[in-house]
Image (tube, rainbow, N blue to C red; front, side):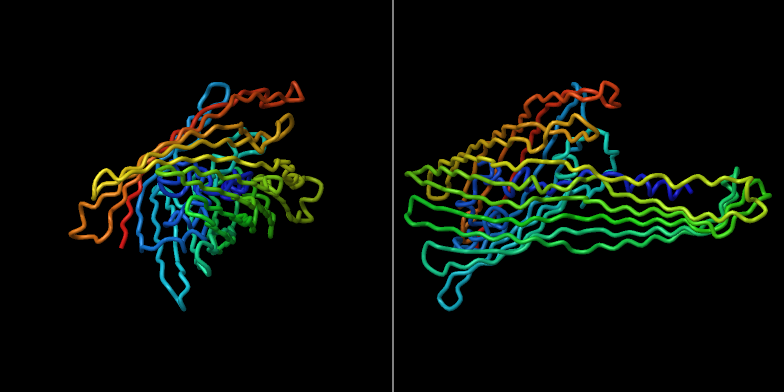
Length: 443
């Protein structure tokens, strides 16, 4: 019985969001420019920002990096317990030419260094920072191809990958009461991982040397978590009464992660040594699926004739049905700037900065749900170095990029409709600081 109860807890509501790349970007250059890269990225970062940019690259590049993010998100002035996120970044972009047409293949990977993925169960009424609880604790992998059919115009697309889980717990044997230590139970656990893929495609057009335009579509995906638990066997009470062939079952289905579809329009201007990039991202948050599990219970406990009237079997507990989160679509503006200059024949310096504003898609929470979020400003900065000091070993310069990010969340007050609400009114705000570095080699 304890095993079944444990699985019932695990089958409860789970925080459901997407992946850390949506929050912190891919690669230090893009992160330092607030992610305004739809018309800019040409290296491995194009696997996320715009696959068409891969065809604009001319060198084989391999990149390796590390990113770290530390949330300091609070409720009523107390730490909300959102875990830090940190992991390894890796990517490659391999250009070539086929039938006179430039093409490229690329992969991008973010691998958390403490967990590949996490499922956290929270009751529907428990407040949680919905977009940063599980969202930054996930693996991200994307593979893309791109071509440049005419000079200045490229197109690309591919797939990003996640995994969904289905599990079954089957417990059989004899349960004794009131001494559970005398129970004799055998259990079997089956779990399957299935691949979940979603598309991403992009276009990039450079009508002049100083203007580039990018258009990107990222598809919707959701990770479903399905759990079944069955306890079947005999119940023995006080060594005197036996109920044979009893069965208690639990079935839970939830959305463990959800990414809304997105459309990005980006423009990049290159006046002299400066690069100015602007992205506008529409996010279909109104399609957001509730992380609360749909749970159904069933009980089949036959009462022997000699116990009829003296033993009462309780009804199965009511199931759980998620409420509509009613999120709202949002358009996110991102602005990035870069200044670069050759300081010597073997040394090039780039300074970068960025800003973004993300209006929260989460409506007020006056009732039973407590999805916590608020509007946030994102301030970013970084530097990049191209070093030619290893030319005796590598034919092209080595690139080193570092970045820092500060997310500042506006204070938000939630007032409950009912004065008897178990959670009550609360105030939420906080910050997230993030930093990272990326090392790239060109061949």
